[in-house]
Amino acid sequence: MAQSKLCTWILLIISISLFSPIPSVDASIHEYRMESFSQKSKAFFFHGGREGLYASKPQQTSSSSSTEKGKSFISFDSVTFVRTKESALKKNEMQQNTGVVEAIILEVKDRDRIGGAFLKSDVICCNRSLSENGSCKLGEVIIHKNPDNFDWPKRIKTAFEGNKEEAKMDIEEIEIKSTGMYYLYFMFCDPELSGTLIKGRTVWKNPNGYLPGKMAPLMTFFGIMSLAYLLLGLGWFLRFVQFWKDVIQLHYHITVVIALGMCEMAVWYFEYANFNSTGRRPMGITSWAVTFSSVKKTVSRLLLLVVSMGYGVVRPTLGGITSRVLLLGLIYFVATEALELVGNLGNINDFSGKTNLFLFLPVACLDAWFILWIFSSLSKTLEKLQMRRNMAKLELYRNFTNALAMSVLLSIAWIGFELYYNAADPLGELWQIAWIIPAFWNLISYTLLVVICILWSPSRNPTRYAYMEETGEDSDEEGIALTSGAGDVERKERKVSSVIGEDLEEDKRE
Image (tube, rainbow, N blue to C red; front, side, top):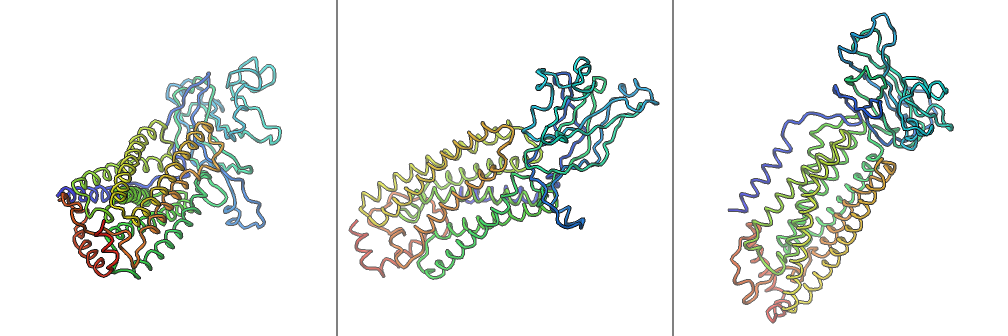
């Protein structure tokens, strides 16, 4: 009863997450919806976004479509500044320039060229004394041009006219000719413009599409992983069909994980491909990809846990802990789903680090709980097999334990690398290698699945991994079977054991 209720809840949550009406969200298009400027050192600024961009590709043809395809740029689309009525009424309608807002695009390595650092001053806006020295223009943001490329950092001015409340930027496209992490800021120095708001959008594009630079390699990676899961699934299917009379319930669980992994990688690939070609990220596709990923992560961990408990090998059921296993899986699914949704939205909409940390901690704690429970169960399973002197199964579980321990050690080392990466690169200068962080977790998950497929591969000799009923074995357990077919599996295993006489006698002697 508890098992069926938990399964119902899991299906309900998956259905809600997949079929709820969620609007489409912009991707490489950064939207500004009447947002305000912040003040710092007598300057007012608004962070318009940041992305890793590759340099435009050299053009060999003059066709417009070819030129657009290989071009990398940041374009301003309907960006409008709205000042307060009080500020506008103070100005004469006949004046042409009654306030200036500057859009500043810079590569992260040129960050020290904004402000008066090169003048040994901590000011951002040019004051009268600096203006008299000819170092800058009064009332503008101080920018020290790059001597190797005098056009950068880029400054685009937009002026208010007369006593109008709005000033609209000209539609402009800034081509990116150097690979790097680019930041966009909107700034003004006039205190009378305090309270000004910004609306509109900017579009950021790489030479091969709209995918942000740090995400672009992942599209290729997901394509390769889709093929890897397809090959694994094909090999598993052929083995499954060849020895279909000898399969056990655990083999069906492994099949489900392979199918989920295949769907997950394929959906992510098509989601990224759509993102790359359109510049927009429909939340319907993204929610499917995130949910497949969360379900696959949850089922993979549950598979590792039940295998470690010896399900189908040393015990026919999970007994009274079935409900606890499913409850842990349900909680993990909800926590992972929330983290993945925020993480994928945050690539564009810049969710705060506090939000990510708040959602990451429960997932980290649940992963730690899974690891502790898995190794605790493995220890008990190995001890039971050693007491029975079942050397074939003992060797099987020792190999599995070694592979699992190696993956945990690699994971701990990788977490250390992630912490170093995030601490050493707060500005995103290492954006070109950011894709390897999520790629590693997918690779290690796939590797563990391959190990399980090899160790528990269907064969003519199921006694090496299948549960065999013995006198007194688990006689005190009247637990609930993990699935309704557990009894059929046991009967099938007893039938197989009667055919293989020697293995049966060996197991009985145990």
